[in-house]
Image (cartoon, rainbow, N blue to C red):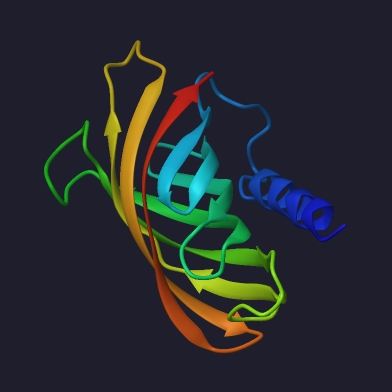
Length: 160
């Protein structure tokens, strides 16, 4: 039940992030994978040239061995490294982690935290539907205990 509620919440976050858009523009929605900490499935929706929301359904194998659901609001900066194909990005987001096993760090509790993603994305040629990204994300866990951790991933998305 927790997973279903969290997944519905992520879908609502993505849909609500661009309330002024009446239709999805061509190739603004991407699905893909991310590998690292965590590893799983990734989604991204570009609201305009600079702003996007992303999220993931993933597994965290480091430390807690938990299912992780996260969503982020991202701002892409094309001037930071003077590249149209390699924009840097930063943002803010939230995560929920559902620990599988009792007796671990949080004894099977649900973990809530804030994410601050920093990364770069490689935008292939205009006619290519792919995007490669690399990111590092400091995480401030707020519940059930305050703690700090790091997420780091490589990923690839396909846009349609």
